[in-house]
Amino acid sequence: MNTLQITVNDKLTVIALDRGRSNPINHQMVKELSSCIKTFESDDSIGGVILTGKEGFFSSGIDLIEAYDYNEEQSKEFWIDFLALQHDLVSFKKPLVAAISGHSPAGGCVLAICCDYRVMVEGDFIIGLNEIPVGIIVPESIFDLYAFWIGKHKAYQYLMEGKLLKVNKALAIGLIDEVGSQESIMHVAEKKIRTYMQLNPVTWSQSKLNLRKGLISKLNADQTATLNVMLKQWWAPETRKGLQMIIQNLKSRNTPVK
Image 1: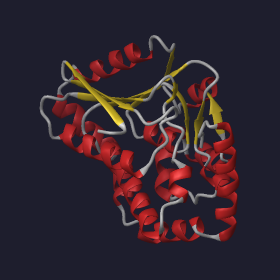
Image 2: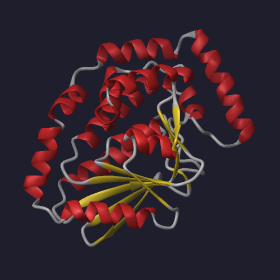
Image 3: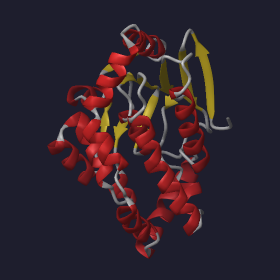
Image 4: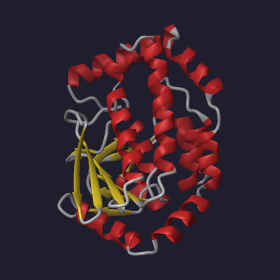
């Protein structure tokens, strides 16, 4: 794996995003993460998975610098696979806990809210979905996923504003479930997931799938029409101009946060 670090200990797998300083999500990371999740789901020696990043960043979101240079076919394949990854994560039948080690905007937040439980590091970090200000049309599946945790009212308002939240606010509204120090976050995440893993795996897994049935169905629906609209807007001149300005700013700061 070129974008992930995998460790296994006593039936628990830790997937650490490992791409540059801020873990921006490119197509390779999407494909590798999807492959891992599918492999671990069918591996009886794995009882649960913790998804984490590195100090300061869980993931800064979609790698706009790389994604901007994708041609039309590459862009289409990327978004198809990114939407499919959300389904793979949400329908993962085993416990999946996010240890959010730092900033987690946009695509980073999407990965986190696919999990069963989220522990976020304390400090001056942000999490949320800011696709609209960036110029990316929000598909209904993202709204459904966001609303699953924070309710439709807040999900709608926050998506339309592109609102990014500080840690304490995210905890207050249920976007994250617990806060820990940089030193303790993995311990807290492991304690939670091993609580899940101690329960009967068939009962736990089937109950999870039952409770997420509506969400999984929505994520599994044909999103071709939505994707076509997203791609059309992605290539619109005004969107490309806006992306160029964002990318110039990212390159000047050399800290690609999206």
